[in-house]
Structure formats: C-alpha cells, structure tokens
Image 1 (cartoon, helix red, strand yellow):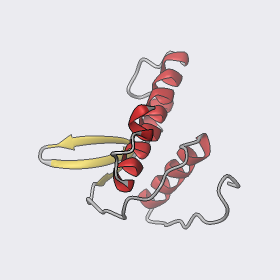
Image 2 (spheres, helix red, strand yellow):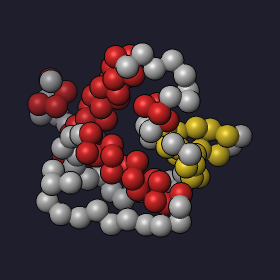
Image 3 (cartoon, one colour):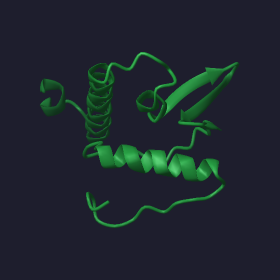
Length: 114
C-alpha cells in the first residue's frame, strides 16, 4: 500500500504500479482456480482457456484454447485498469477464438454490462 500512496511516485509510475497489481491479483486468482479445480493436465480446458504466452524459438506467441498468434508488441499506451473479472476473461477468450476463425470483434458499451 505504501508504494501506491508514496508521494515520490509520478502519475505514470503510479498507473503502471496499479496496473501491475491488478494483473498480479488476477494471476493469483487464476492459480487458485486451477488448484481448486485440481487441474493437472496442460490439456485441461480451464488451463487451455487462459490467455498464455509462449516462446517458440525466438518468437513470442499469445495462445488461448487452440488459437496461437505471434505477439506483435503493439503498445496502446498506459491506460488505467480497474479490475479483471470473469467477464473480462470471457471477452479475451471470445475475441481470441473469433480471430482464430478469421473473424473480428468490437466490444463496446458501459463497463460491467457484458
């Protein structure tokens, strides 16, 4: 908590730190779900449905279920992140599956409405 409220952090540093905390809390929750569901195989759907990153030779790939895409290092800026919810995970999975099938997606609307 002291890191976030510490006055020496710049606004950007505080945003970066907040985003990292949100991502790490989500990672903790995912690991807990995997343990609770006794996932023991890399082929288990609960594991396969997570957004994962793998190095193949010298290239980084983003994977979910049967989809795999080269990571393009696109940077869209340091935007604020409130939380990552099960709805966020479902959105990532749906968009990844759509891209794998050569479709697209355009999520829109107020936060938390699905």
